[in-house]
Length: 386
Image (cartoon, rainbow, N blue to C red; front, side):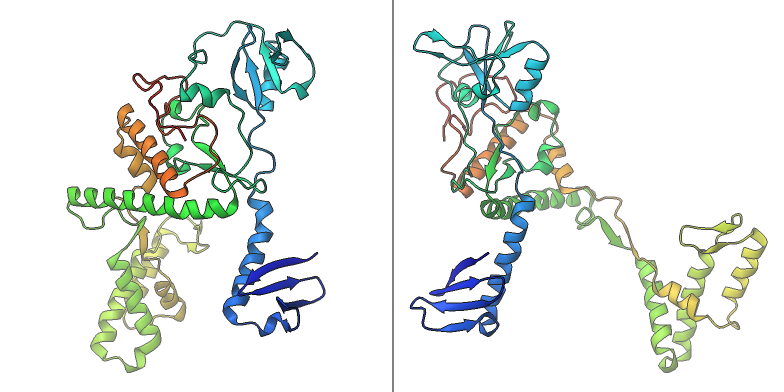
């Protein structure tokens, strides 16, 4: 139950009973409470991160690497164990193994073989087009390691095309397309997400600026809420009356009360009896009209409850022009296949340039098709492999 962290030539040793720090010679004992604040903050940050590591990591391996063979025992691709069991359960495949040294060895019923053979002749697909990076990617077993640093523990699923964008793309760019989903450890994922979010923010801000220029309203699309000037003025007047009424000139008091009374009179509900969503009593029409008159009558002072109601008014209202950043970016693609393809390839290049992964799956390429089952013309053998 002991953890060690190296920091400034010190080895920080933490146990369930005591927290002490020893230098490399082991001759000095320093309690953690006596450490400089910046080192204590780093230690606490590391502890919180370690506590959350298990929670944010995948509970099972991402790749099961079950090979799918066609009815001629030629490998087609690798699939998950769940999908393999589905094929076997439906009676359209059986557990099998590869042909080794010219002998066919079949281990029906043994999932340990990590291989299934289809009992029908598959139609379509390009698994027989050997030599292409896409085909190599589909048929190769994939390692359950962080593609950036090679870590074998605590993995997270990372979307090369950010999930906020990917989820809004047409189905053909998502269905059966795991090419742009890779494994990262929590540390690498945090670093990669910072760079991805910076790129997302830059893209979205550029699009918002362009839209604002089109409608002629500055920053019209920047925030999901905007300040209602009239409600903000009501709140300011109410706060001034509640805090500084005794020091305010009479003309200011009169003008502020006029604003507050007008707001309170305007929100009087003249519907049937009951309670509204705020729990306030709803009055009959005649009673409501009488209540309005009392509010507007300057001879009747405003109560603390009325002032408090005006002070707590929510002056931030929904922005009718606002569009979320992800919707804005995907909408700019206009559903055009070429634009979407360039968009996906651009994110792949961004991932390679920023993360510089050393352990990408065999055959993974920036220029691989972005739609499942499609072989791009003119790219066979010319794609840039990782």
